[in-house]
Image 1 (cartoon, rainbow, N blue to C red):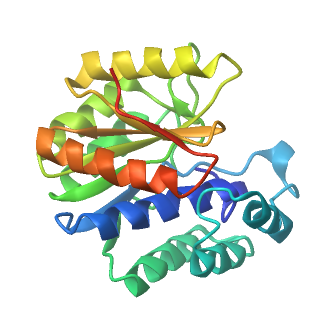
Image 2: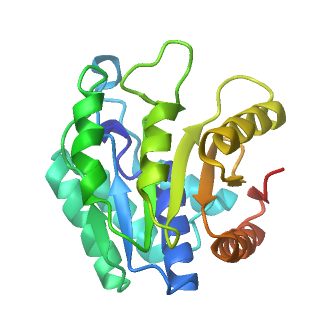
Length: 240
């Protein structure tokens, strides 16, 4: 994630989906947020999204737009420049929703230091948790940077999490045919982790969700399908 995107429509989709999953399945003890926070892009300074984007989201029926409390929270987040304030507001929102939000790391993420970053967070991941990995862009490309999550890092987290947890991964769609991309990434995640990912997308971003326990996977599948049915722009899928 990047501070230039604090409180944007993707944050709105993300945190509303997290809230929906946590509320729908009380078996989770906490929401664990791994932000992979990068520095602001120099070329993007001054281009931070405004409240008009959220107003458009409400008119177009984008994911999360029905949650007016969260929309208001996103508007406040857009005014924030300090990283720790952002995390405090995220915790505060979920606390109001009676959801324990655990920020696994509030440290900056860099490509050069990624090994130490993940080594530090692995022991801090709790059990019975919805674990969210939030890279700027998503899973690794041919030339990964700090914007990307490596498949090896996904495997580290997946191997570490218990059977009562779910791993949720953010992915921005590249400029390729979406159906083929989802199948290819889903197949690779399955081969890597032994878990067939669930997906939910608004055709701009996609979330992959991995669960070890078949019963938990079925519950999450039903939860995200209900969520997708509440927004016309969303599509959910159960994998292969």
